Image (cartoon, rainbow, N blue to C red; front, side, top):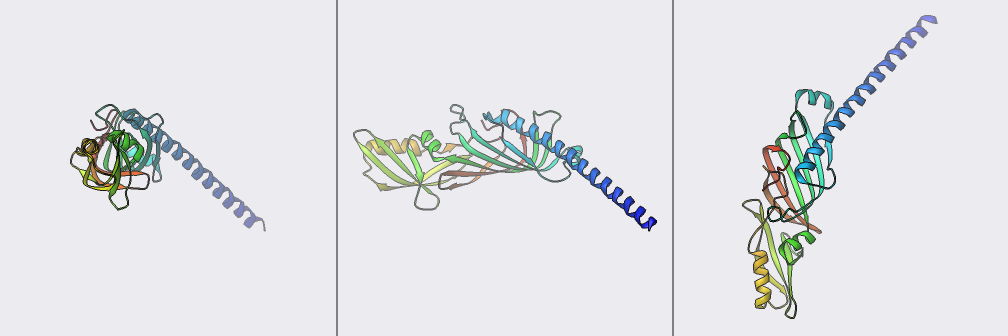
Length: 238
């Protein structure tokens, strides 16, 4: 009975050693992934001016091999409350989600380059209302929002407006239809000033292009794509 017992012990030792090696490899890889996520979050926070660092997740295993090759297969990033900045970045972004394929980082946290990018910027109705100067809310029809103009001593009027993507990464408000109230001259003038010019979306990384706009329950979703996009501090659209 002695030889089989010895063989089993050897197998147990080998299996335990393999488990220890694998556990150690996973731990080292997780540390490498955490460092890559931290550096990416730091670069985005510097570039976008967010109060809090965005959350970053590096996909795939092993990450250490990807880092050795100098390119991460896929990285997901979520940032909140990207602030407005004067007239060049007039509209805050409530939430920005970014998916990056083939992310290549430089030797520091100052720059990263992605082969392709998909992003969605969520804009709350409160922020859109502040930027336009009229109250904006979800409309009853798909692809439309309601805009309410109020003038003291005159009254208020609500119109239904179509939202769409316009050239230059802007949101256009078109096809205005009266819903409630009388469209008196002061109210019409206020709505014309608010809705005639598309509003630019510049609180997103440079190199992304607006593809579509969707009105949701609590805001407007603007979807972007980009190829061969370089991210660096102050890389938001100007």
